[in-house]
Length: 234
Ligand code: CA
Image (cartoon, rainbow, N blue to C red; front, side, top):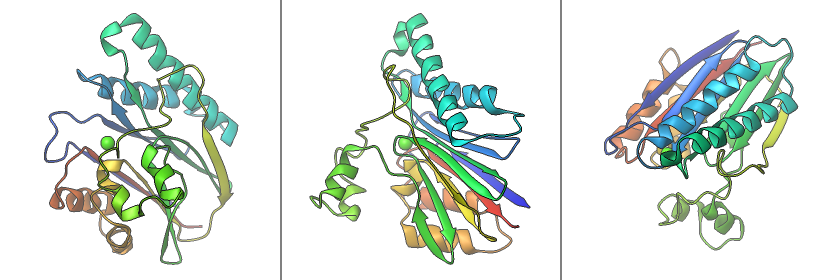
């Protein structure tokens, strides 16, 4: 059995919500954080999730290669849109996709939105951020805490819709009873620390997506906030 909770919110500061999220059958979950001026970020993240749905909705078997191909199709959709609408030049989006099937979790990822797994009360970040600050953290130049408020926090090294060559990270692993997945944009993860995320995901019989968004707003809500929570029971 799968329980799904979704919430996306403009936050407390921004004028538009450039995040998009989508849930569709068979058990596919997508989060995207758009960027670009003049509302182009909204266009980019929406194009990504709609293209992914067009590629995967209703398919019987979806492997990691299919998830990657769907992100690459989204990349082409955005580039084609920019070619027709020069005012959208520079728009792009992150893409984080999760699919649950046959006792397995499969994912694909570009950018700095994140997929987490809460298992055995331990929150693990499954995806790796494709950001400038992540490189600094991995080299030990700054701490993970400093990265959350670094002036170059928003500089991405990879995004969907920026160029025709795109590397998409993918992975898969066996599911365990009680696994809880979180797909989140950085408007959540920059505002709410891992211990608070863990605590909110563990509260039974509540809507964890709404609770996470409310906590991000309480902490300042400086960016758009998206949380998609998927609980899996065998
Ligand atoms: Ca964001």
